[in-house]
Length: 119
Image 1 (tube, rainbow, N blue to C red):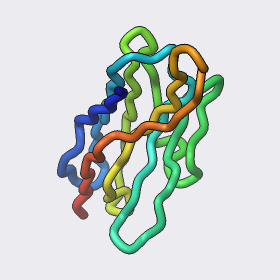
Image 2: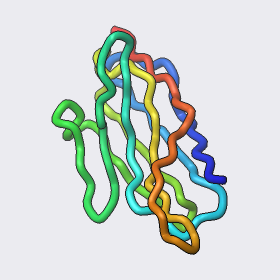
Image 3: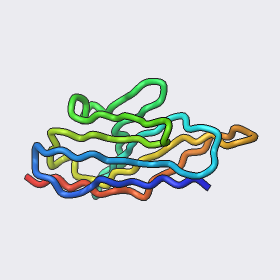
Image 4: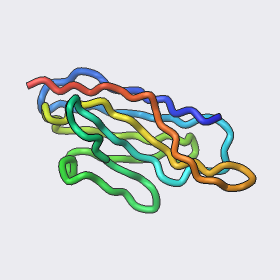
């Protein structure tokens, strides 16, 4: 069984910074892509950033957010700088996990962490 545990959300003022972490645990062959989605109340889920062979960012966060990975510890981070009220959302990490044996790829999700940016 694979688990993703997130941490690092909270309340911050406009212009502030937060760092989210997401650690994957369990038994698996490898992890392909890790990344972050977010969803604000009443809005569609938005892909924020991914880290696989390359890194990719939503236009809305480019230049402000940085995704990084610690592959030895199966952990992905999201450094968020220059935060804006419109960044307020629940942030969910995900991991594309490759199983042992059949090498099946399955997406696993974290429980979500709330980020609130006050104006």
